[in-house]
Image (tube, rainbow, N blue to C red; front, top):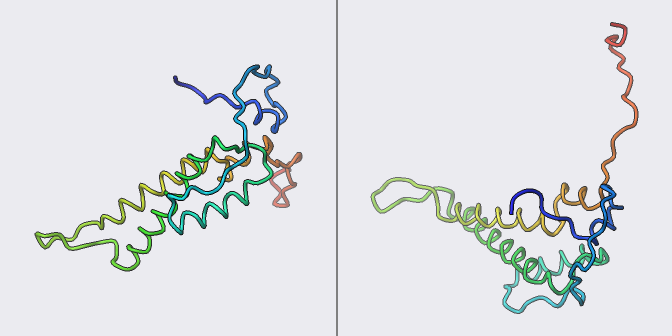
Length: 154
């Protein structure tokens, strides 16, 4: 399926239904609140889970059905942190078996983990753009400020 992703009804309600389109009926409504942190996550990922669930609490948009995507975000975050530590310790370039310098494998790992973080952040409303879309409003000045440089006289 191509085109824009459909907007969940609950998100339309939060935004005030800016398009004034009819709300879908019979949309699935997952039950339960965000559950506890999955035990499979490592210490860094669990710390990020606690931080992020605190930030998401009270929005009413996240349920037990979202645990996997949030756990994926936290695991990617932990991988990114580990890769960054290794890059700092060993540098971005390594010596290959043939004596040539090449990019550290940790650089690829860091970049892939950050790509995952970025994609999942958008899904979870954790980026500035995702939050603007969530609230459905951007503060734009209603008047253009006067220019004191004399160009208005032309």
